[in-house]
Length: 390
Image (cartoon, rainbow, N blue to C red; front, side, top):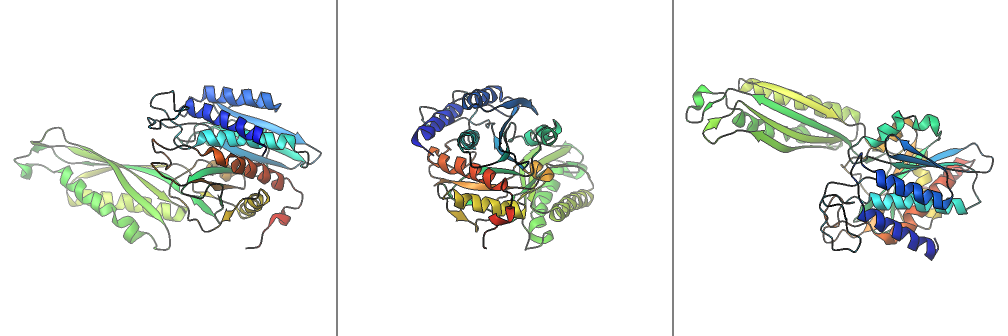
């Protein structure tokens, strides 16, 4: 990547960082993307699944096609960075690096537009609403794959703590399947000084919260991975009253559907059994949010070859994350791969979703370069040639 393009991308990224927008509200971000695509001379279609934008590059006579995806939305976080380009939208911040992802895809578009060595069709997917888990599904429901046919799809996430510009490619699962639960125990309210006349849901819920910790420890195969966490507890109105009900909200994460089903079954069984033991009724709500983000084998290997072609270091030993990603919905329809590209040391609160996070502009050549290389390799006629030695 030449110096002029890099400086342009840095300017674009910092503009996006200063003007973050939440899920479902990315109108100005989408307009900015459209403006820059117009400057690059790349045609696009706007309004896909809300504020989504799909740009298309075509070259040569090949009928092969590929999709590259970047997310655009920000988070409801008050930025704590003292930067000249800090968020101007109070309480909203690009704390996950989607400003960098969007800019990287624009950079890949610029690189591919200049390169005459490839043949085929590249669709550039600027996706809204990743943080609320709705954007990928909305674009698909709006006919993404029918209107913009593609054989496979690739995406990436910047990764704090991984050496800057290093590409981590996982074999299989990359990020977990998300799920949420809400459990309410209905007891009998009464005076706190006469607990014998009540059915105390606070005491019962205390037992339930402890019992839920046994799901991962005792119900999930030790060779599998899962998370079950209680994040909220609601109950009670006065210190001298035992309430009629208590509610907890929590999250669970798994990598395999069989483990997900086991976790859900255990949640229901433990809640109902605890309620019965304390002579109460349990109300249980389970919300699942899709599937795990898992690479398909050939696309995983294309990703490795693309990183090496771009001159980047490859890591194959980084464990998957229990965070989730709605790129999984694209992978439900098409084969593909999702990689992590190092953002550098996670110092001074530099982790994702932290109020001091900042995307590292110095990795833009790596992120844009990897995406462009992945597209070129995916469009080659003999994909088996991309298969690296393990």
